[in-house]
Image 1: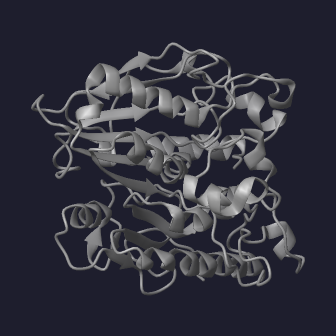
Image 2 (image 1 turned 135 degrees about the horizontal axis):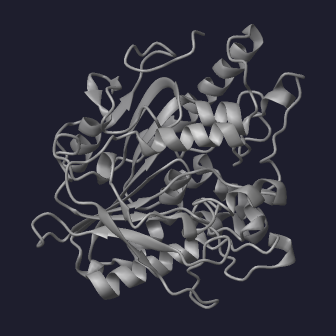
Image 3 (image 1 turned 90 degrees about the horizontal axis):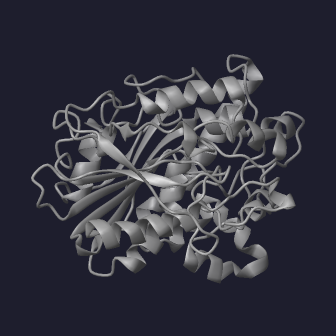
Length: 391
């Protein structure tokens, strides 16, 4: 999905400050050694890598692995600007990283998981951590799109060098593009950590709703974008799978098998892929995802009457789409009626659904503290603990 430059800067700042600053040790940077056979490249060919900090007691076998978010690109015009930033080149990475939200080591923010080993995988491939093109070509404008291959490489290195293969528990998480990456890569991680309890916590990664009310004969396609919907026609830039094909994107294995080679691009929609994911998941999502509505569906000027109607349309479809989480008894969801992307879902935030925060909801699910793990707002755009658009 694409970000307009000013909007992208705003959202990146917001995502980086969701959780504030932890009170302990920072994670330290490690670069991998890239090669065409193993991957390990950022868009511009600089080496990918990760940040790591050991658990607080140096004996824990539990791990948090976080995938960074930050949009995507699908054309030369949208990819070129990213290649000269930290989203496309490791030349701009800092030597250390402070964890936030579920990856924070501050017990006041993250009481349940603050002692775990912590990994942060920066996002520099613009392919929602799913690309499988470790060799650049004219078709990719000279860029590498190897996000999934990098993930495999980094996991193998963590196993070999830091004993991830001895882990008892692992949580894979990420926000926005990292949330999509969590959905997509969770079953791969489960498949290589065969003796480990692997779970996923995707945040703001439910791109896009399906079974949309204006597309009854096309249940697998995303909502119509604003330019189409406002003219009473259906359609969006994500209909034909071209964005999936650019990066030779990896798909949830069971989903890809179910749809076959020609139709597996449908698996790039998390609404479609969700039911095929075997790894237990706790989904954090907003009903009115502002990035999806504004940047992917091009609906801005939110206080115009007709655009509020579009927001209702989008929110209704999102609500219908995430109801399928209930069909997986090992899974859970925190679904707030906020007008926000991931900014309101961090552990430091005060957003509440059914009287609990996102931090409490994840802990309740992970440690099975409560009978229910499905936290849905029971009204639309009325949650007093977060921003919303009057509808």
